[in-house]
Image (tube, rainbow, N blue to C red):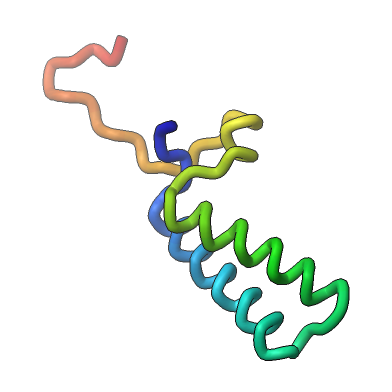
Amino acid sequence: MSSNVGGIERVVRILLGLALLGVAFFHVLTGALAILAYALGGIALVTGLIGFCPAWAIFGINTCARKHAKAGDSGQ
């Protein structure tokens, strides 16, 4: 399992996850919306922490920065 979530996206996912978990935990949202906030917040937080998103893998999306080729490497 290689990383497919880039640095800025990881930070955004972690902050969004904490925010969603916070609004549900502190009862800003209640009922079904709180359950949804817990679920989405947990997913965002975990994918941000581990740097891998299964949905991005399915769709072939990779937001990680590309590594530069070595000098003299033709890139093939």
